[in-house]
Length: 594
Image 1 (cartoon, rainbow, N blue to C red):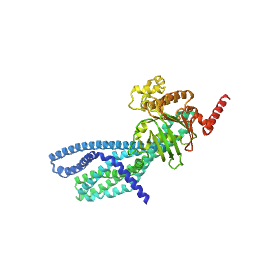
Image 2 (cartoon, one colour; image 1 turned 90 degrees about the horizontal axis):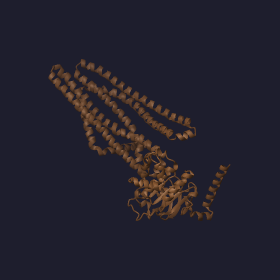
Image 3 (tube, rainbow, N blue to C red; image 1 turned 45 degrees about the vertical axis):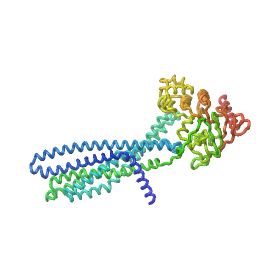
């Protein structure tokens, strides 16, 4: 019972949160309600005018009044048409503005959540949230909430008019509505449930289609087209099943609604005939009652439908509400401190860190990196190399200890200043599907074309860029698919160079390249790294032999620190690693010779 109450409170809170995005548009909402009142008044006035015309004007043969009332009906319907168009426009405008504000708030929170969130939650989960939960909230703004307000207003006024015409006839609505209310919501819930599953199935199927297109090389290489086709077909089959069930219950809902209409109409005509015969109701009153009954029952059953579907949609907003209230792990400092001088001096003092629900990765790490020094982190996988990188960029904060840049603790430095001070070159470079120029300018959005060209020359990328069909304006394709690995890395280096950071982090920047590409990229790096503090993660010691110091990380600690020659002379961990790599290289050469 407590769990049900807790879920109810969470649903209520998520709905209230969704409605907060409507608060800035109170004036537009007030105008929307006014247009709704005029539209409802026009709809309800027409049956009453018809009643008066039949009972008083037609019987008296006063055609002057008849034509006057007819003209009034035309005018009322024109005003009603204007009011309805204004209501529809305002309804869509308010929904679009509130949806825009909500999406903007989600994007802002997504950026604030930082690196930890992206590591724990795949991109597909976030995209699914935008394709389902966000769309559901948008439907509340543009469809359900305005419709519910209009229908409630209509039903309240219409029932009052029906009672005013004849209270006994109005009682016929009670069993008719009860019949629909007993069984109608069942079809509503089923249709909405399978509609939701159908939407999720569509997303899953689209994901499979995307993977089949983006991974076509792997499927061809492994001969797995049939295997993946079967998986895609299974997703499509599940989606089709849920879609058909949603359509079936949707049609059943409409059929049952029409059945209740017609059953009530039959009862109404039978009772109305009896009342007309005994003068309990006038002919004009019966005609007006019939018109009002049909429209009121439609609005009433539609209101039940909207309330039922909105209740189901509100449940979908709960994950969105929970997402928006996730705590931000990396906060901007309350009292930010700017470094006096940008030198690139990094200091690790007693740093310890562990991921949630996992043993510590970094254990008492101490290191002082001088400005312009080149440091290499080497060691077995799981030793903490990448984790230290993440702490330098403040993607994570140490559990204990301090990381400083130019004497200022990273926790006290403005995040924008920190990120501007650091440049990255990863093993896998992400390039946008736009032009080469835009990908380089990503490092400095306000850079001029001359600065872009200078950065490309510094990264030894200018020559191959000029050989492309449109030079710097050539589109590189999705994730840079039109470029080779070495070309992508040199564009990444140009992107970093144009940023002019004081600290550069290299994460296996050349490990996935062939020998020729590796030499070209290494040549570009050697030129760009001059005078900048550099930390590199390396598995191949040949790429970092010339570095100022090598730090061998073992079980989260700096097990060995020194130059390559010093550590080799000690015959310790680095020596064993080099010996193992040399043996593996010799083995590969023997295989080639054989």
